[in-house]
Length: 388
Image (cartoon, rainbow, N blue to C red):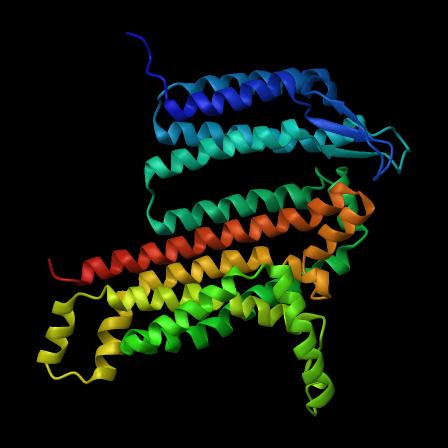
């Protein structure tokens, strides 16, 4: 009997196999700006480590190709990912000439493609296992702990991105704080305004179209254009309103970035609130009226709890969106991880770009996983509470 072939495994095996054969694993550059020399896995690592990693990845590719148990596929993917992350750190030590403080070693396309292929294998295995929300949070925590071990151990200290970080550690954490404040602050403000506005739109149909159409119009404005549009009115407010400049309102900086992110955040919050309330079963409202609940009691005790999963989905969309859009805020002095992205582009230093891009992607991914788990927890709890 021939072993069954996994359809997604064929794609993963093709990506990983082609990468292993043709794509470079690391790049050795004479300094942080100049182009470097691409190195394959066997060239980037000591002989034993190189051949060992190649053999391990070949076995992992074969397992991905075959239809095996999801738990086994997850373990194989995790082992492959840890091996790849370990190997890129070892390659920095192996390739950097002794006593040379200018040479830089960066991950090449092969590293990123292998990381993508086996991360896809892990994600597919997790999806097939369908773990409960709490277990997904545990898996996220374990992943964070493994990455923390790599960072703390110093294994990656020879990589160019870590050298960029070491020279900017204080600035990095200051910009990280600004990035999180922009993303979360605008989300909180949009939720405080958007939730009541969504309730009003649900209650007053004549108001719904006007509000949603206006918010849709805001969404069509490109982010950079919206940042620019806000500079003039906020600069006027700072110049004419007493005390406005003292509390941080200016034409450039955090204020226009915050307002722009707030405006972008309103549509998902308002529209999902309307959709969630509209999806509340009529029987639930009728039962609440039958026991004498007031409109306010029905809203707080019946409608909002039942609509919460849909509302949380809107909040999830906003948070992931804002984490990405906050990067653009650096163009108008808003700070955040975009500072490193645009500095790196200006200096043609791609590792500096990665110093801003990698934390942004990591934050967005972690936020999505956490909020998805919270949504599923709420949905599961609601289904248990509702009568069959």
